[in-house]
Amino acid sequence: MTAVPSAAAGSPDATWLRTVVSDPLVAPMLRQLGDEYSTRYGKDAHAEMARYPSEEFEPPDGVLLLLLEAGAGVAGGAYRRYDGTTAELKRIWTHPAHRRRGLARRVVAELERIAAASGYRSVYLTTGPRQPEARALYLAAGYRPLFDLSADPETIGPLPFRKDL
Image (tube, rainbow, N blue to C red; front, side, top):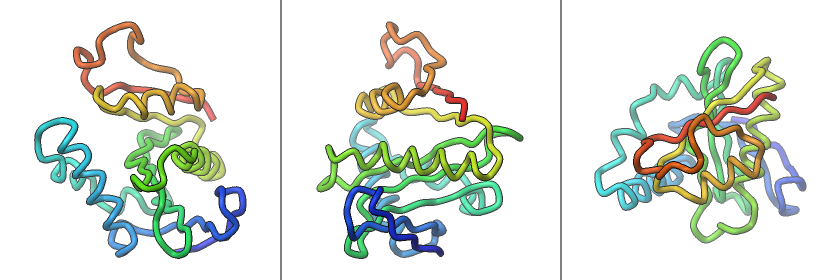
């Protein structure tokens, strides 16, 4: 685990922490994501959250990142190898008490920076059709939708996006 102070993270006491799925600081993020997805989609999403081996989010092919303020996780996310030149973003999260501060955008930008420095040339991701704020985030961050934006998201299923780094 590596903590790096970062005023660019939005707060003078903010730090980026590169860590692993088993880190106790990650548990609230995964629990809250699973609970939120379960509520939005009406089925238990915790199994889906655990379907990828934790090693996929560790170097050299992946990263799990938390943004800490005063030692507590306020936002985070990860990427894993999608293919030889593409990273796949997963688990982009902001603590409910810290939303509307631009933290998710900062997490995405930092993951993109790390992925590019690791040799990835593009990023791929999917988000759910009942997550309009995530869809808006990725469009605002320059991701190209790989689906018809005018279609009802519920008819598409997972909404795929791609961005060149």
